[in-house]
Length: 462
Image (cartoon, rainbow, N blue to C red; front, side, top):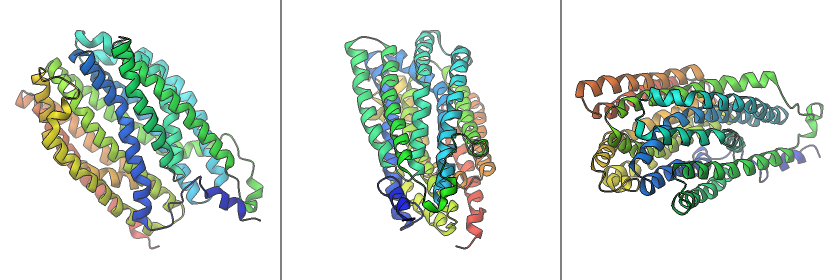
């Protein structure tokens, strides 16, 4: 009688990542996450594709220009996702289900307060940031309009990311995949409806994302709450069956993971804003070419980052269960997975990059097309390097080793931003900006791997 609730807990609701062959478990968990992020990236790719093809080069540049500011908001959503996900994973691995549910409710409450703050800050500061990026007058109004609508949808962005983090923490990567497959496919169709049929211009692109992401958010949060309601505590834990709605102690633990993750992503976004200013100084065509190429690049990097997040969930559950040997096995399995995905993607961009860029622009945009191709040729061969960093970062974050995680990340970021200005000035072309990517990635990867090797999971027997 005492064991029955625990059986029901994991049946069809969760996946215990502390059992089974580590490689099979990790791959089965991460591959749907990889599929999910491909669909999630279709949101912004669809915006750029529709803007470039059906509105014009200026609209493509405006969406790309705005994207660097939206990344700041995405950074906060990512931090909430990781803070909740890592702590919930650790508590799930330790089978502390009462505090696990409290951690979820605490995250939802704290995130609501954060959301209001971000929306106010966004409406007040976006114009300043657009000017800081040296946004050309030709695309300033469209960039501002796109951002205003985007900010209205921040609650959907924030709570959707929290919901996917909870699903992942419970070992369920398939549910977010199904939500994203539906919503991103719908987003493309609504983009075309609003822009081509209803002639709404760049506002149509933004409202399409708002609508589709909103529907996904509402359904995913409702499903999370329904799933949590079905999770019951074993009778042996009868003294703690009453789950508290908010815990300052758990909020502190969540923030310990969330704040470094937010800072990481935020500083990357700020760095991108500074770099975008440098890119904009070379003209609208260079900005448009970069806008298309960076979408393709981010599709790959964000996909590997998501697998790194899966590595965090895997590591956190096993660290919570004190099965340290599985962390090391999982790391090796994670490397095999990302490198297996890296090779075809790298070859695709090197050989067929021009045709992928033509999805966003016409043959007549000669300079923009050349810019995008050059970026992909310089950056894509180094995907193998950055993929290794993102997997080791995942272990560091899952273990709560945030100082080491931050050190590797900020070294990469600071070097990339500094070199973008130095090399572009020395070479008097945007080529210097593109070269800063692989240099920063290489140094950041070396540091991250060194920190992983020194981790306590490598010194502790299991």
